[in-house]
Amino acid sequence: MRAFGHLGAWWRCATLLSLRLMFFLPAGLPVRSQGDSQSDNKVMDNVTVRQGETVFLSCAQGDFVTHTAWLNRSSILYAGEDKWSVDPRVSLVTLNQEEFSIKIENVDMTDEGQYICAVQTSSKPRTTSVHIIVQVPPKIMSLSKDIVVNEGSNVTLMCSASGKPEPSVTWKLLSPSGHGLSSDDEYLEIPAITRQRAGMYECTAVNEVSTDVQTVELTVNYAPSVVEGKDVGVTLGQRGVLQCEADAVPQADFEWYRDDRRIFNGFDGIEIEDDGALSKLTFFNVSEADYGNYTCVAINKLGAANTSIVLYEIIEPTSSTLLQGPGAVQDGNSATTGTHTPACLLLMVALQLLMRF
View (cartoon, rainbow, N blue to C red):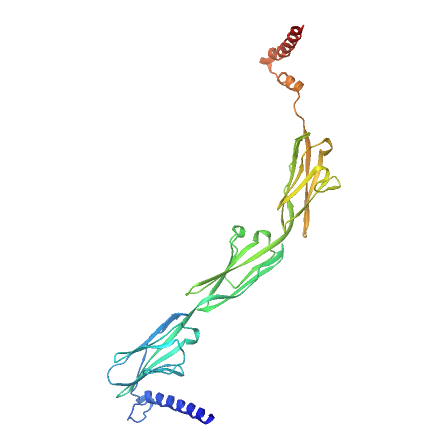
């Protein structure tokens, strides 16, 4: 079996050598020096094809052609109608007196290089060569992962891509607060990062073929800051709500205090409700003891901030204050009216009392 294997390999090698000699040494002619060669060589323009597409290779035949073949660098693809290539993507399209053409489907980078159409005529060999250039769309191969940093840290984002022609790589911050932060490089350096530069960063790789885009999320942690609290006035026995708003990453936890005493949810009929960046302290039936100064504290792992809010009493008007109200505000033209109005009211009351007897 080994003898047959060696014999088959020797035969194939001999056939290949014979075919090469046949193309470049015309039958019946002596070997000539390079300067005296009768061969007719033609170089066609480069063929540019994108990865995954199909390319067609064709050369003219002419009269009195005895042998013809397509070669790729060191291998023979077709010798006449006989396929020598084992690649299923390579196939014969046309073979006649005018044209000899083949096609290569789903072109890849390995297909790039020089291809030669060799024709043997009755008088001399002729070759036509063409160089295939394969373009590859960009692909982002390495990209920074989503990252969480503390405010003030130095940050470096990395994005590398492959493709042909070599793609250009750019960075930009998609957030409206980015103020045009961008880079025309694989690396984006952000020294002493601030919370305004947190957000989604986009890496774009582009060449003549197409574009590849991927994103990285950058989260910036910072200590809480609270909105100054607004004092709230509530009538005795009514419902009152104190609000505290904080900006923080990670999200702040809230604590409420009355003087130095912490208030817990449900304590003395008080409800505490936290909803994201907002905390509410609700009194459902305000008593005299509830009036006073309250402190809201917002806390996360990076720090704390607080604000004070006063719950004060609003006194509802009584009947006596209503009666005194109009007469309390007078000017020169209303002095008489202000004097007689209470007298009229007293007279009406006296008449009602007399009518009872």
